[in-house]
Picture 1 (cartoon, rainbow, N blue to C red):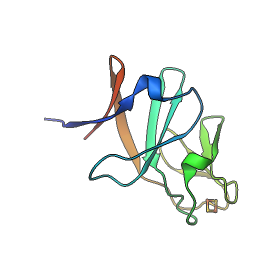
Picture 2: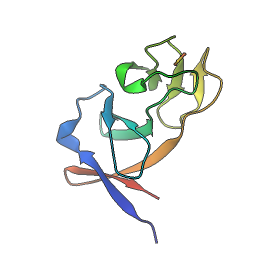
Picture 3: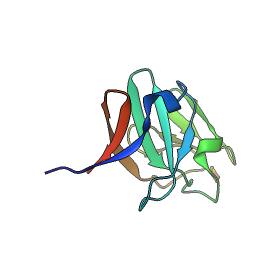
Picture 4: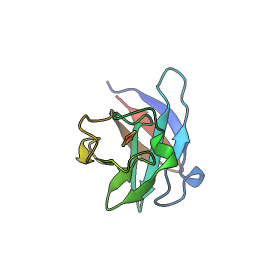
Length: 103
Ligand code: FES
């Protein structure tokens, strides 16, 4: 049976703007709404000590503010150099006005 953990309310997000969310027992996350799709990734860039929530969203990628590397929001896979390693991606589900991490 899958478990779900409250992430944030839908209202807490602005479309296309990364937001850092801290959830107990998880690493810091960057959460993004793109239309009615919701994404959660590890907030720490795999290339260096930069916070992806301080970056921006472009073409379904989140762009790191440090060296402009990018990761696919849907998978966490690196899509733009200098990033070579993925960042962890989490499943997100919406239930009413609430978003949950699921496992
Ligand atoms: S620290 Fe993120 S691209 Fe370099």
